[in-house]
Image 1 (cartoon, rainbow, N blue to C red):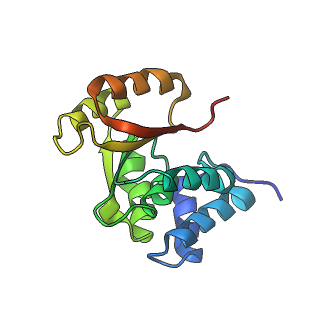
Image 2: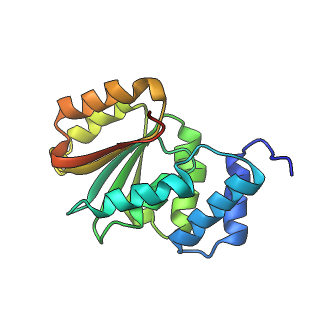
Length: 177
């Protein structure tokens, strides 16, 4: 079977056709199936996702997560499903089309809209705005970095400079060697 070029809209349609609404694990399974069988897409995926889950479960408490790179909302769903009531993922992406359409629909379909806040802009634009929010300053429990690889280090340094991380916070970066 030849895989097609990835289309966020096609991935969303596949999720809605095959996954149960308000079931984050079913949404993730549908996106994984779409990626394996239909069209490869950039996401942490099922194999590395298990490792991410294991590390996130070690964070106590895990209430506040900043994600750099939203794409279609896969990681936002994966992370948000592990948060307790009141927990929040702040997912940053400069692609307004993604952050305002497909990813929001994927997250809402998974039943997690109350746990994910979409923050448009580059990390350099959005992180200072987040750090100005008193409820976030020094309170971020985890940062998941999975955006433009050339900015991993500078964006992590900005997060540190802005004082967003609490002591002992977890930092996870995808696609690093």
